[in-house]
Amino acid sequence: MYEKDGERYFIVDAHIAYWDAGPDNRNRFGEGFIKCFYDYHRNLSPEEYLWPFEKFQRYSEADLLHDIFEVGYADHAIFQPTYLTDFFPRGFNKAEQDAPFLEKHPGMFTLNGSFDPRDGDKGLEYLESLHDRYNVPGVKLYTAEWKGESRGWRLDAPEAARYLEKCQELGIKNIHVHKGPTIWPLDRDAFDVADVDGAASSFPELNFIVEHVGLPRLEDFCWIATQEPNVYAGLSVAIPLMHTRPRYFAQIIGELLYWLNEDRILFGSDYAIWQPKWLVEKFVDFQIPEDMQSELGVLTTDVKKKILGLNAARLYDLEIPAQDAAIAARSNGAAVGSEPVSPA
Amino acid sequence: MISAEQVLDALSGVRDPEIDEPLTDLGFVAGVHVDGTSVDVRLRLPTYFCAPNFAYLMVADALEAVRSLPQVGDVTITLDDHFASGEINGAIAVGQGFEAAFPGESVGELPALRDLFTRKAFTARQSRVCDALLRVGRTWEELADTRLGALAGGPDVTRCISLRMSLGIDTAPGSPAFVRADGSALDVDGLKRFMRVARLVRLSLEGNAGLCRALLATRYGIEDPEEAAA
Image 1: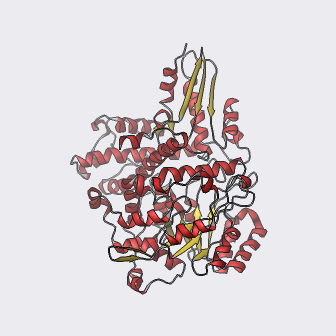
Image 2: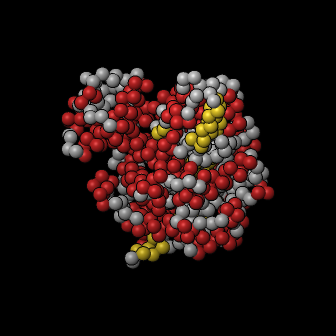
Image 3: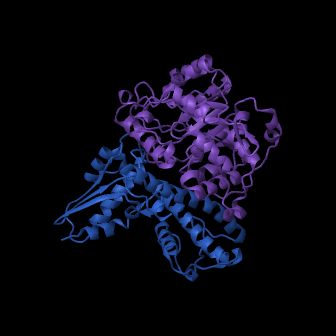
């Protein structure tokens, strides 16, 4: 819970990781991957929150608890696993690596699973085992993951549909999608979220949360999200832009409120790339700059409460404080954006 | 003899196809070495994992631009510090295409990708021109009637015309100043709706360009020009 100016904010950090990226668990691609993360961390964090690279590669269980809960204001946090076993032999952040937190700290964490449609029948069995072992309510998918010679996969491929059917059958309803720089086939735009559109139409009972709000393809993301009511925006990677590029962030959040609405935007720190403490504090203080308000509107306290926790609580059936029930129930139905015209 | 300035000038005509800005402005040219008529250019990108298709296009376009210099001899373009440096540099050096660089991982070359991003660039650039005119008091009705020849010059208008040429869209002075990315006409309401989306495309492109500059600066320990200006 975060308190400011007499307001109490229920915080769900919907995107955290506990990764293992030290030198004993990575090849040259893994090294490139964690260094790339570190550059994001260095570039978009306030100076007082910078970690040395040694700590960034592999932080401790105590670090995570301290940063997320003791100082990070979270009431609940959701692990979003990323396997990357071709880069990190033991796995970068597999569900099994995160699972001990659940047992030791009941009620504080949600653990999501993951799948890779290229794993065929074996992968389906693995997904079932994740469900049996941890009762995962969602999955985190990375379409740019490398596997042998393959450099990625598409969410609208028939192989992926089998997995989404399995998710539906098991009651795994939150599908977090993270796009990266490679895809099958490589000559296409890997960041395009059009494949999420196909999957979201075919599986209307599942929720599709597009991480980092589709960046660097915000336009493609907004274009599909305004048409698909079961598509959500995950603010990971976008929200730290508040610090270095507040006007750019104001435009992003303004566009999200316009094309989606205040009920379909979720806070996530992407810990350990960014520390939730400053993100929460800064977001509560954040306002659309005055000269942009006539175009983009303002961020009300209620909207901030929804984004920081109430929206994720709804998707994950988390209990919310009684004081917030009225705000959470006030749904802001349709998006303002209407009759969009395809940009290209 | 060729000078490094000539090479840089040629490279300033090569753009990152994803964000429509010159490689030289983005800081992607890490070094130019000229020895008589031989030219060596090293390119660098903001991250180790920048998308390989756009990276390939930049290396291929840089090669073509430098080779077009008069009296140039051997030209080598090397992409540094990228996961696919070996594949891309190797394929480009022997004149092979994208499919040859990534055998089995690609089903074609990159014209469709380039065309899509040229259209996005055109859409974003029109948004800048249109917003500038709205700011000085022009109405939507006036903008819908404006002809290309009536637009005052400036880098955005010049770029719009050049993008229209690449896309095969009419550049006659009497053609409409604002059109959809496929070249089709817009009435007043259509223009308003199109520009609403165009603003989003522009936000994406400009934001990506800013992040690319910032990450490049962090990666190579150089000054971020935007931060320095702020």
